[in-house]
Length: 395
Ligand code: FAD
Ligand code: PHB
Image 1 (cartoon, helix red, strand yellow):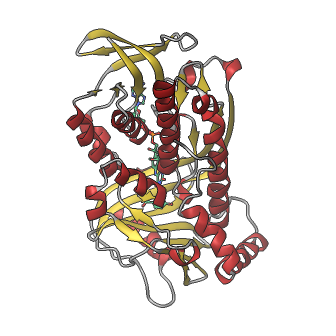
Image 2 (tube, rainbow, N blue to C red):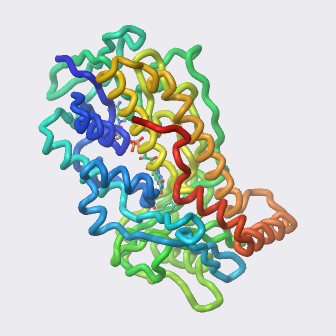
Image 3 (cartoon, rainbow, N blue to C red):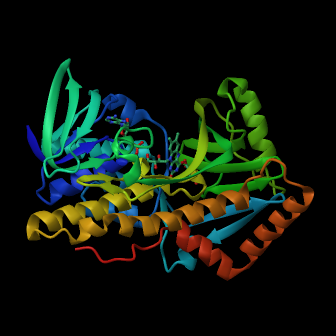
């Protein structure tokens, strides 16, 4: 079998790329090692930048997003028992974010893929990439107990942080930049109506906490824990106790409590692979970079990567030009590093670090006091949070 672009991974990056290519008349085969249900049910990101929303609408997969997504024009930063409002729309000339679960985005994209009739294979095994340096790279995998192979013009490694594409690149051809953080997030989904219409990021003496949501009936909450924390150590009662301690404000605001329907601990990492390309293999999304979730950037970076990649591939097929493909890594990494910077800044502004002193905490409160009292500082947060523009014009 031959295809123009072989795509490994059916997360947001792989599915978005497949659909963008399909709209440009470019053929692809997507292979995914998990089941369709697993991919759809995996609970992850929830915040879409304005640019990601615009992209999904332009691609014709924004119908349910526009109906069910929750558009937020602002957010709250909470500390010392008080919430402070940041008006994202006012500070950015009308831009906003939309709360719509990553799993809903994935579901919409799988439906769109099915409607095109193009190949999307779930539950494949032993995926291996070959001959990336040649102009006929190849993917081999096992499907229904049989060995299959697809030759490609290009391969897109959209297989996430634990995938096989990045490790297939020879060590001498790639460099990694990495930082582990001394905490993780314990996250829950609860059947409780959100008690705030907008997100609340809290810096508390006991540690960071975040109030978010998925729908008018479902609340999504997180708090900072040690990175190795075992979720089994936390009963639902103990989780609510800690949430309320960190989130409740002096004006009486607190999250509504309800049955916990999902819970887990996510470690935090910052990671960048440079360059995001080896021969005819292009890395996109989490396979190339990870940011701590405090800036809500992971999914949005994946969307920008594949937008650039799809544009480069279209230019190759329509004009026989490799101009954008040659610059792919540089174009993406410029934005990726700015997202790393912002995610790191949000993380260190809002979390408590092991070994901190009272002095450090007072300085942190002063930082937050400055942030929420200065229009210049709030504008900086707002323009990064709704998403920085891509510094380059794409065809
Ligand atoms: P992924 O979503 O990881 O998709 C990769 C796909 O490749 C997966 O479906 C995987 O099964 C498949 N795959 C892996 N190996 C192979 C293989 N060998 N062969 C075939 N397929 C393979 N971001 C935010 O902005 N906000 C958040 O709150 C947030 N929370 C997160 C919570 C968790 C637990 C995790 C892990 C991530 C979170 N992120 C969050 C990050 C965000 O979810 C990712 O940035 C986003 O999923 C990236 O999409 P992707 O398609 O690049 O990678
Ligand atoms: C979420 O709703 O899951 C969410 C929101 C904002 C973040 C991270 C996660 O920064």
